[in-house]
Each structure stands twice: as C-alpha cells, then as structure tokens.
Image (cartoon, rainbow over all chains, first blue to last red):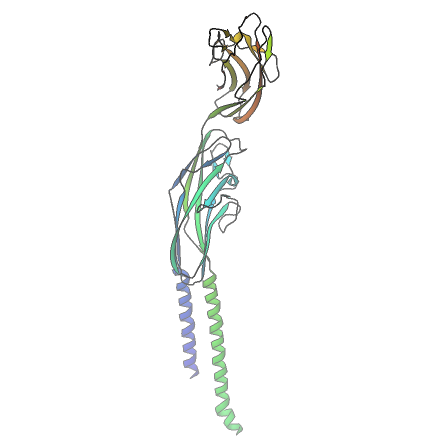
Length: 164
Length: 196
C-alpha cells in the first residue's frame, strides 16, 4: 500500500514539474513598431516634432494569469541619444515622448532595460492569458541651450515589454 | 490488546502520517513551482526605431520697434524716437568664418521721401551701432551699395556655430542744407546679415 502511495506522489510531482516547465517555456510576448524611422527638422533653439508617431503592437500569450504587462521605450545612451558622430550630442533628457496622446515626458526614467533613459508607455494588469493592444508614441526633441551646429543627428529608440 | 495495537493499528497510523507528510511536501513543492512560474519575468523582443534629426543652417534677424519716428528740424539734426534693438540668431556650418550685420536705406538719393519729389538722401541719415559714433548710410554691403552701415562683424569659430546676439542702432536725420518743405517723409530701413 505504501509503495502505491509513493508511486502516486512521485507521479504527481513529476507531472506538476513538467506542467510548470511547460508554462514557463510556453509564454510569448512580442512587440512590433512602425515606422522604422522617425525624422525631425530641428530648430536651432527650440522644439522639433517627429514627422510621424510610432504605432506599437504588443501581443502576449501567457499561462499564468493574473499578469502585468509593461511596455517601455528607451534610448541608447543617456548623454548621446542622438549624435552627429563628431562629438555633438543630444542627451536623452532632451528627447521626450507622448504615449497615446498624453503629456510629453523626457526619456529619463528607469526600466528593466535601461536606467535613466526610459519612458513607460503603458502598464496593464490583465486576467487574460492572450491578447494584444496598439499604442502610439509621439516624439519631440528640444534643442534649447544645446547650441548644436547644423548637422544630421542619428539615434536608435528601442521598444520592449515585460510580462510579470 | 497491546499486541493488537502494535501489530495492526500503529502501522496504519504511521502510514497515514507518512501520506500526510508526502502530501504536504508535494503541496509545498507545487506552490514553489507555481510561484516561480507566476513570478518569472518574460521579456519581449526588441523593436527598434531609427531617429534622424536634421538641424539645417540658419541665420535670422529680428528688429523692434517696427517704426522709428523723427521730428525734423528745419535745418539740423533730429534723433529717432527710439533705438532699434536687433537680435541676430544663427546656426552656421563649421565652414563659415565670419558674420556681418548690415542696415541699409532703400535709395541713396531718397532714403526718405514725401512722395512729391522732396527727398532725404542716405547721406543725411546716420546710425550709431551699440552706442558708438554716428555714421552716414553711405557705405557698401552685399545688399546696398552706397546706402549701407555695418552694425557688426564677428568671427565664427567652433565655439559659436550656434549662437545669438542683440545689438542696438540709434538713428539721426540731418536736414542741414536740404531746404525741405513741411511734410512727412517716409522710408524703409532694412537690416540683414550675411555669413561667409
């Protein structure tokens, strides 16, 4: 009788651990953003807006609700979010974003991916194990007091989500 | 009685306790596994957007007030009602070496006119940049030959490729020798900069 019970318990443990492993590996979270490039015409001392807002699609398939999904955008450098490659830089504090038409915030926040150069686009708690949503992100660059010379400045914005 | 307890009941109690222990262990293991799964952070792929920002070369001038009034003497010098404040702002390529601001009258012979053939020539209109001495609008510039006054010339270096400055210009009109009739004389002074 004891051997039977032992086998049953061992079976449950193995089955549950397999299930847990399946849950952990079966979760997916993907982000897509368009367009691939946002252009700005900068004033010598003022604010320039991007020529288009970014549309971001976040899709998730998870096993263990409830979930919290957070979408971040972040620049590649605190001191040189954009650069002309000749030592003239636009810091991340001069780049700001507006999520879904809200107020513009500088890319100076923290995220799981980039400290001091991120903004949070959304945080969503959900009981749904699968879903997707679209968000928009408008961008601005403020050249006030930067005294930048005429040039073309390049940078990369990365958009990434976490599921917890 | 004791033999019955020892041989029959006690093993069952022990077996039952062992089962409870296993159940508790599995439950604890399950909770640990479930919690670890539930709390594991999943990161998405990275979507990237390229940022391309162009700051074009620019050179702009603004001047206030829009009008300067004079009460002319029948023969003598009259000062303008207010000095002109001129702000020059620029973002220049590193290939530039100098920046010059000019003011110039619209005509050498008729800087101001009453429209009836009575004129004040540019030679009788003088200006004082930044409180300096007055000079007649008889100089040359890329914009007005014989009708111009240079307000400033400044070197452009890597340290001031993007900058701004404010200057003042006071105006006088000297009617000495013109024998002008009583009238209102109007003219336009243009202010313009050039970077080389």
